[in-house]
Length: 323
Image (tube, rainbow, N blue to C red; front, side, top):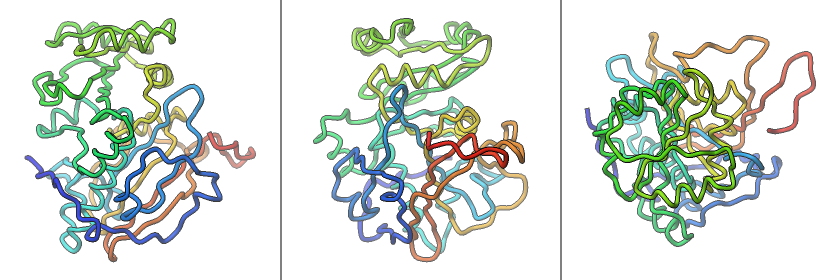
C-alpha cells in the first residue's frame, strides 16, 4: 500500500496550541534551524546540550490512545494518524512534526524492514519551507540515510532510497552481518575504518557516491555506542531514529535522548504493535523514565508530547543528572 505524501503544509491549518513548556526550566536554548514556519506552527523549538562524544538522538512516533503504533490489518505507522477521521489536519500536523525533526537532523536511522514494507519511503523532507531553511543554513538538502541491520541480510537494494543520488547512505551492521551484506549488496560501498576517528570524515569525503559501511559490535550484534561516536566523527551531530525496535534498543542502552509522542485519539486494541513490542521488556525495577518537555494540542483530537529520557533511576538510588 502506498500512502500519499502531502507536499504542502498550510501553517494555519496545522497550527498547534502550546499547553505546557518546560524548556526554560530544563535549560534548553539550542536552536538548530531558523525557520519562520516552525515558529508559527510549533513555537520555539530548542534543545539542550549535544553530547560531547556522540550524536544527539531523538525519535518520533504517532500512537493510538492505547499505545499502538500500527493496526493489525496494516503495519503502516502513518495510518494511526491518517485514520483519525475527526481531524485530518491534526494528522497532517503529526506528519509535519516528523518533517521538522528530519529537517533539523544530520542523519535519519531507518530499519531495513521499513524499506521492505514501505515501497514509497524516501526519508525526505516534504515541506519546502524547511528545505529552504536547511539550504540557507548551509545544510545538505536532506540528511544521511542510516540503515541499521544486525544480520546484514535482505536489505532491499532495489528500493528507491538507493537510487536517490542526492542523499548519501550509510549501513551499520555487525561482523557476522557484514559477511551476509557483502554477498548481497549490489552498489559500490566502502568499509569505514574508525580505529582513528580523526580520519573518518576524510574517508567518507574521498568515497562520495559509495555506500559507507560501518561494522560495529561482535558476532551478530552491532553496537549503537560505537555507531554514534563514529557518526559524530563524520560530522553527524543530530540523528532522528525512526524504527520502533531500534528506539527500544537505544533506550535500553541509555542512548536515546528524547522522544516525541503524538497521540491520535483513536483506539486500536488487541495485540497490535507498540514501541519495542518485539524486544525484551524492561522490568518494574529497571526502566527508563522521562520528563515532559512540552505539550501541544490540535483541536481536541491530537496531543503532541515531547519527552526527555532519563536513565539510571531506581527507588533505591538518587536520580542521576540528565544524560
